[in-house]
Length: 629
Image (cartoon, rainbow, N blue to C red; front, side):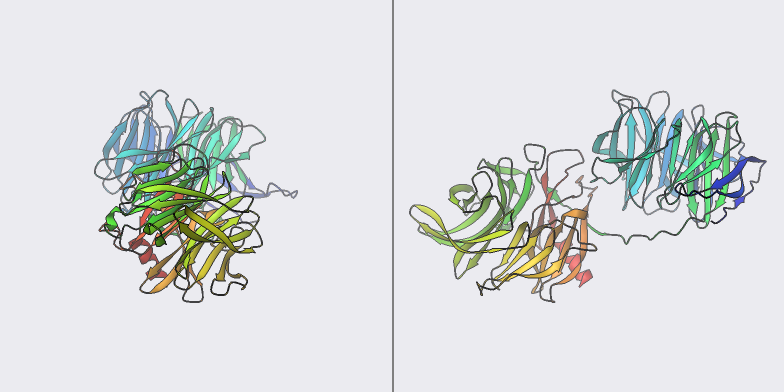
């Protein structure tokens, strides 16, 4: 076991006790470590937060009596923002090496102050103040996700609010989500690399939540069996964190390895902060017993962590009106191209608790047809009927195990035409194709069966004849037909993507892509995007909330994956756990000159609302493909 070495302070060193480090699962005696030494700084306050770039730039001090104080690495006061600050946290502003964003709670009013500090000049600047509503704020912490700043704050009700911190010309907080985390919380912190929100609960331990805007409201507990009165938790970017309790004279280190750093018996640490620059770890603490702010520098000997490659991120340009009810409701979209006026094209979206919704390209809901638990929907154009050529949408209807058929007029009005029976027991996914000039629908069952129906149209309306049936090994859903090449692509949720040649009806499906690495089950919605005469299959990788792209004309090669993140400028949240999607490369007016991608959002936040669909410019998808091919 390696020994941690500590740097003595420039001011009087205070030896707090011998340090030992041990694996909590080991039965061997812990090896003795060097003495942990801290130095007292000549400034008063309740927390000492090191601010680092490649070196220590100074300390941000919070003081209920004085406010915020910026001090040099040696502890000399440089500047001050006068107030009564109970808690604060900071992050560098995206794109800046000198400006840090600070969020701070006013002890007297529970008001939230948003400030900047120029660490080169020491200038504080108040950007905004946000009053509390009906409950006092109790904890506060910041995080950085991609190039956006996020703020978490819990209140006296035990409600944790998650905000996007907009740092444009006018600073403001945009609500993202709320989580009931419970009372008796003393502190919070976020590990930015893993996006883990840590919450200290007195007498219990450290709760771990997802800090991602699209994260689930699930939690795990880092349990402290001794039941300390945990007062503060501090996180490093790499996932390590430190905690202190006033009733236990030690500093806990958790994360990559569990350690306890004993202190002198009279110490009562109330707060702890940590930061890393190069091979140096900086700690700041407040000792309630002596009233001193204490600092230390340690050799950063933690094992190196593998840094995850940054996921390519797109953002949505438009979002639709949410469906009417919470729960797993919105599922699969289709795009209807208005040939006379492409800007007036439509998005059809299934609401599997109600029926079929119709949206404009601005996201406005134009129609809602109560036709039952429709699951997947697809569109084909200019189908011959006795009344002339007709655009037609077909959806799988789980209320009646039928094919729901809709006509779409030249102006975009959608009408329900028929319910046609299938012989399946639990209809699920669906897609359309035109084969030899005739509309065909491929519909599957949760047991793996696929059925192919051929449509006819008469004065009595549409009819569908079962023409073939085959089976995938396990549950499928999303599928898409390449009409020109007569190929059907199908997603088997737990396994991958299959291809079937429709020009050879008796041919067996062939597995062309499997889950693994960056592609996680379930494989859900899919569509084909054409760029410069090359075809690309886009599919949702639901398990990791990503989208995967395959070059169909290059041996079905996996190009890569991307996610859909927050569009802060348009106040649109990211996308998670997508079920269905659709893409088109057809120009849809000046807003979408390179077509459109529409995806279902499984967790609609900013603020929390029922599920909806997100619209992403095809130009963004095209740029991703050009970079990856």
